[in-house]
Length: 74
Image (cartoon, rainbow, N blue to C red; front, side, top):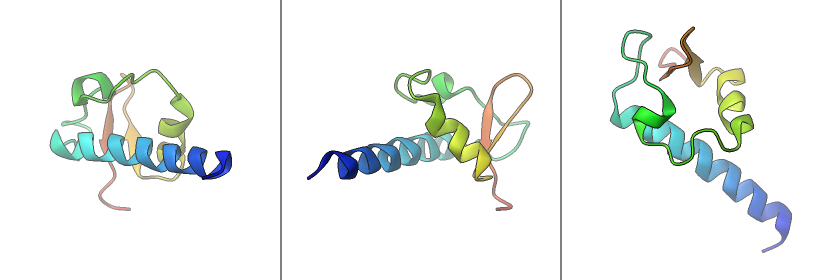
């Protein structure tokens, strides 16, 4: 596997982990939003571009206090 494929796999795996952890926490609204740390995402401060990409793609929503929830209206 070349390095470009490895990076793509890492991106997909990281993003899927974030989605899975928020799903497990039932974070589906602003009221049920949780921090990535609370959700159990490993090293939540590492590689913030992955999280920002999910927000930009409207998969996640971020609250004013920095918590996240899944956008089920997407």
